[in-house]
Image (tube, rainbow, N blue to C red; front, top):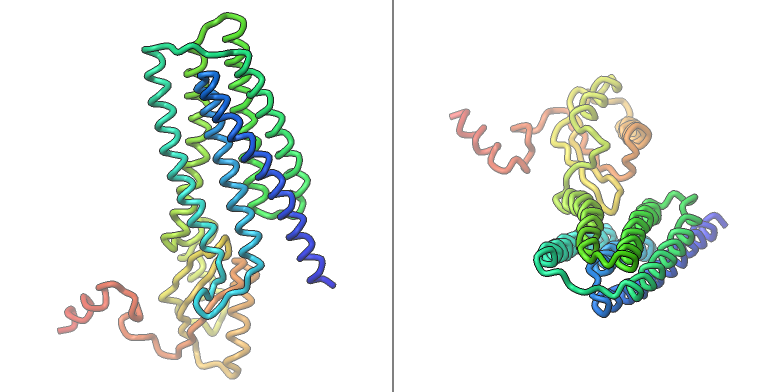
Length: 310
């Protein structure tokens, strides 16, 4: 029964994400077309911002989808890493879009372009309504504490600011005819896009580089294990990385020969799980320390140590 429930939860998340993605994607296209026809750069910048949302929603959708796919012999972690790769590619695309919009904005200060304020206003208001609708859909889903859904909701909230910017620019153009406000606001919206793209790129880059999650201090973890378990003499050769937001770890533990090997191993696993939320750890227990402290993956340290002995 419990399984049924979690599956239904995944599906309700999926349906919400799908609906929000569809709304955002449709309005993104509308804003691109509207921006080109009305000659408004702020609309194009907001469309760029909507692209960040659409991409964030798509990545969240993929994550929900891939989390349900079972790992197999070739992809032993399942397909979760694909979402990280998608986020990384998305971030790079956004940086390029932002650069293009800022470039065009600077060009327009020197050669102001006519902007159809009325048409721009209609599209910008449509974009705002689309964002509100997406946010409402996603916000209802956040009680399940799905990180991807929460991130997507935040994206959409940031996007509201972009649409508001486009509306303000349209109103100013309609009432005063001062067109430079359009590139000015497009640069402000681009700054919003840049911020989300940069953090997305940093996070996904770290995960692709197999960096340790920021929340876990490896040196502290080694000390904690040694101090809190009488049998543990030394912890070394620790590798910690992340697959689709789940921490994964391998470590060597030098122990005083225990009466019950498996019970000690279980205690180490429980400790890692409760203190550090690491559910997937591979522990190699040793009674003697392995030669050269790096145990193989030293990338050159082992040779150096070797020459040092001679």
